[in-house]
Image (cartoon, rainbow, N blue to C red; front, side):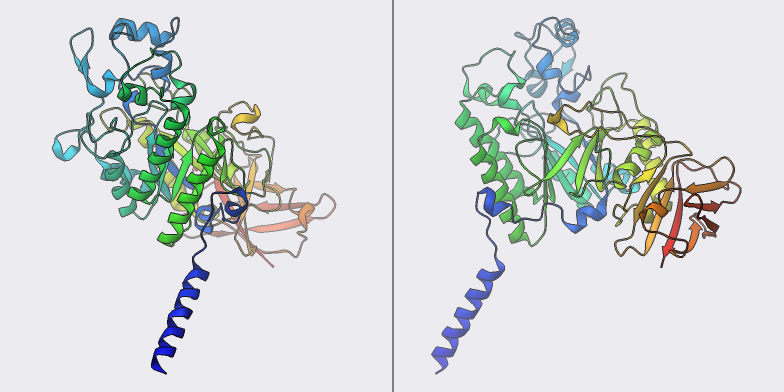
Length: 499
């Protein structure tokens, strides 16, 4: 009797476990059952990543230096030839292994931890990201150049073997997670073996063929997949962000990656995000718009990657920056359309973050610390906003949309967000109305009548100000009377409680 009961109990446990364990197969049909936009991601809104790697060492032109230095006639080729030598004699991988330039100075990507007398302090970085209001953060784990920023067994060209002699991804991941931020790792190396180094010399040594993306396609794709499995197993990232040219990979390799990631996340008992610019779809991953975003609300949640600089993603001498207002206003616009922002910063090769970049991030954090309730955990309302300033290109990376600069709005520009339960509506003013009166024309058009708004407040840091408002039926306008401007802000928030 006891034996039968035990067997039944074991059978019950086995069946229960099988029910809970949804295993994704490496097929579109199976993977389209995932949730590509978990609730935590929709709530998070803002993340930071950074183009920091071997390509930061020349600090010239941009992060595509390794490609362009091999193209005769480019400014990178001229610069490289004059500073280091002809690229065939002073190849890009010397920035990894270390070599002397023409002036006799030793050059290598070798950031040193502050605790060892260097300039790189992962805890300082993570503190800065947290103060900026970011809810997720992390490094470019590998760019097109083929250098892995982690201690890799798949790729000998990595930060543990050369230069820093440290697993840079791990040091940053630990610091970021210690501050309760989610971890994002970005992977850009689909382009490494599909065109990035097409002008570099052809090598016969297997290790150099690996670095310069010159392995046969099936071997290169295996390395691509193995690198992803390695970062998944080592770091359990909450987000894996993908750059372009996934279209050049075999579909089965992409499906194998997605299945491995989503099945791993099931074991970790957490929901994860992976993004794409091409080759995938919105049922299996999240669409990313580079330096852009849609012109209007999109039902499918989305992400944009943008940078503090319009001249380069990595640090270069003479790098230029957007204003804090441009960055913040375009961020607010994206949130009003169901989007998140992944903002790039550009640390120097030694691991120091330039003051101008810190200041922009701290401006963002200052505003979010006061008015974040209108951003975090919100959703798009029925319309994204009103006013003359159009933001967003309407295209993602491979649909031909021009990459747009972030734009600062005007006093006539409003963006809306709402609480998840539809009980609170936020009107974010991108400037202060000249006559201290805010007129909103898009509310009445969207099912709000004169009895819909219970109360309205102007959010201010030390307690809010109740506002009087009226509904002018003839013009279908809600008119809010504002006080004299109290404090200069980059944007102002009116909070409306709805009936």
